[in-house]
Length: 306
Image (cartoon, rainbow, N blue to C red; front, side, top):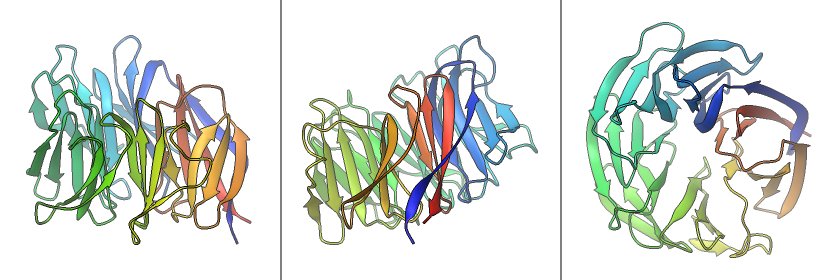
């Protein structure tokens, strides 16, 4: 049995100029969206993926990032207010009013949130990484990039003990041991300015997507060897990437969805989506479902065993 893309595409359209981030609950039943509304109003929404119905909408300003805790017990979102300050907020989707966890000054470079599997650990990304332990609702680590003009990108492993950071040091991905506050590894990247870093949910593969010049580096982490198929090289550009929930497929969008089994180099293709570079993507930790945000719309596609 192998994963392939379903032909059915579900979608929703938002009154937005830009969709900045998305996150599924681990079981894929809910999808959270962070966006910039065209004419003010709420900037964070939660949808049921079964029927695209709206669970709730929150925040006022511009959405920067959004993550669930595990199965959606809580939703954390990062917004920029009209006056320029940023807020990190928490809400129980569909059941409570949001409350503010932290307020930041006018930090123009704040741009994303990342979480581990159960949402206990959250990283706030800008030109630095601020790591929160949400069980205690306190900051446990803060790492500033050597070049503070660079946006930092990062990805947690499953239990939150490792954070892979692109942009902390020049032209490399840095592995941070979150518990012990030590660097446990580094992997060369094409440039100091990155677009994305992701790690498979099994922590077997690391993918770095460079900014300019374009290019993709893929590492097999257990062997610490760079994976070099012909299609992924310094001239290849297709971002952002996703891993399937079982870590078997590396997925990107080239008009049609494209998935590659890195272990065998086998390629599978899926339905075509509207033309455009995705501004945000999401993949559920435990469910065969992926989502792409293109312009003002979100499209999600399930994967099936065949």
